[in-house]
Length: 137
Image: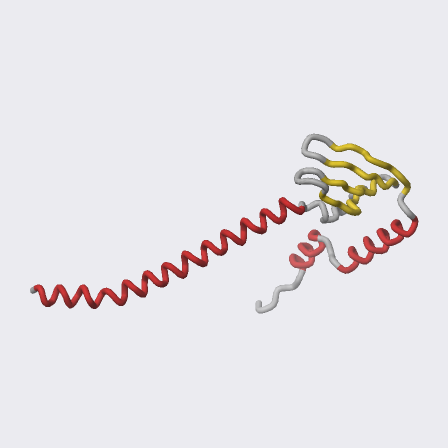
């Protein structure tokens, strides 16, 4: 009896090693994906999502520069004025204010019309996908 039990134990060993190798590969891949997600979240938090334009907004961030770990200077166009803001964790301070330069306004208008004509809004894409005739019926 001991000879058959030894045989079954040695036959199961290669299958067990193969299973452990697969488990190791899956664990490493899962760990790499979690690290990638955390790095992406850190990048979004670090650099912010303020660079994305908001449709229909009169406020546009022109430039931003970090001057410390939690301090930055932001140049904003709003209501026909260009404003330099000092931003900290506790408050926002207006540093200077001037008119928007004429050449910057032309670039903004051209850039807005070009980007809007090239990329349809989400509502337009959804409407197009719902009204598209279905084939195969």
